[in-house]
Amino acid sequence: NRGLPNQHPIEAITGLRDILNRLWTFIHEQEVSESVWVVNHNLNRFPSFVVVDSAGNVQMPDEVTYNNENQITIKFISAFAGKAYFN
Image (cartoon, rainbow, N blue to C red; front, side):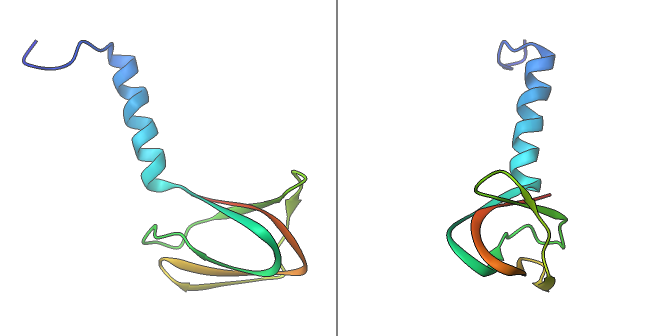
């Protein structure tokens, strides 16, 4: 067994996938309605993203600025609360 845990190979792959997803993705929760979201995602790259308002509708930004590899500013026409999913 070489000191490895008794784990099915598929379970090990699933566990690795979960770890990698946490390293490669980020979810920003915007709890206060704002028309400008400044997000520190700390992914060390320029990720793609999608924004969903608190009602579950996808929202398109009016303007996007990648401030650096770890921060993005997203501007919308109107203020709302929701989540931004980065990958």
